[in-house]
Image 1 (cartoon, helix red, strand yellow):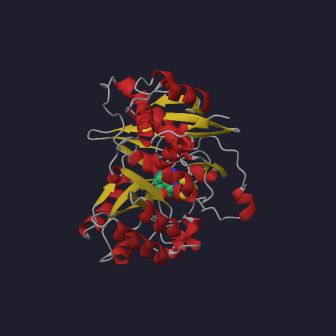
Image 2 (cartoon, rainbow, N blue to C red; image 1 turned 90 degrees about the vertical axis):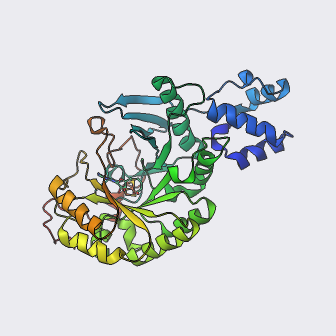
Image 3 (cartoon, rainbow, N blue to C red; image 1 turned 45 degrees about the horizontal axis):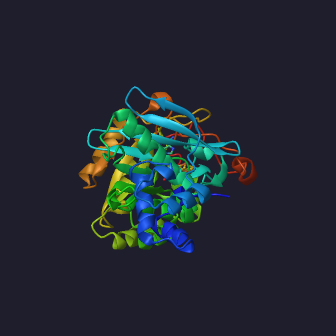
Length: 374
Ligand code: SAH
Ligand code: SF4
């Protein structure tokens, strides 16, 4: 059985090299060949000694993910559907913007959290991705886009990574951590800590670990200003209610002092988008810690009965937050013609939970009226 080198961060690769009596600087050379130059042919790694190349040819591999489909949006967004075996496929999305190019990466095939408004959650959960599968998404997208954009050698295609694809990244912590470390590593992708974002539905204990191990930018999916409503939208809230979650956010920032928490808030027509919800948010978060808001107009998906808030209501909600001193942005919908927008990533998931059947999680009614869900 060959070893997949995509799975290793620097420490992992150094260990694997040491087990075979190879020096650390050799491991760093190999990292650069793979993650900076995109090479997969060990024999072509010209500054490595012949016996080392022969050993790698025999014992190592770089396991790229078969591409099931690759779709391009009119706005330049590119979405890959990667086969991860066993009937499962996950999605990654490349989002070009003026000042940056972001890759949205998946962490799990499906998701066990089951938020009411999310297509991935509606698919159920199959399995965690391993570190190699998380990094393969970045590696494949990076080098495909370098070629497509005709970049000069060494010029990077992807400037930012957001763990906002399929899955709850902090529920797959042991695979996430080496992948994040490789993204930040100068011999890997060389991204600065603030250009890598982990988005979580609120796994508070794991936020504490991430703060110590690798304090990248943190986005927290809030979606509601009170526990009653959040319990229904994000089932994890029943385990970690808002008090617990917000205390966790404050602790996180102690490890990342000049940072802020980005609160994501999916705008659902008549559910969480009323003026009183905005006012309640202001009361909840005023004078707590540095935070910003990113409002995401709900992106519909097949089978969902929820509706997107009208643009004027989103603007009014944003204005209330801005006036209270919270920097608030409204996320632009990108790649909606190829179902690549937030919350639309469904991939292909062999559900092992049959979540809705087994746990009887309530699904929000489509007739929810303002105030009714509070
Ligand atoms: N599991 C993580 C990260 C993936 S989801 C999390 O929940 O944070 C990335 C963002 O998209 C989250 O804020 C999520 O709440 C939001 N989202 C999910 N479904 C959506 C939808 N249908 N429309 C708009 N945003 C959605
Ligand atoms: Fe999972 Fe995030 Fe979707 Fe919730 S919003 S079901 S946590 S992927």
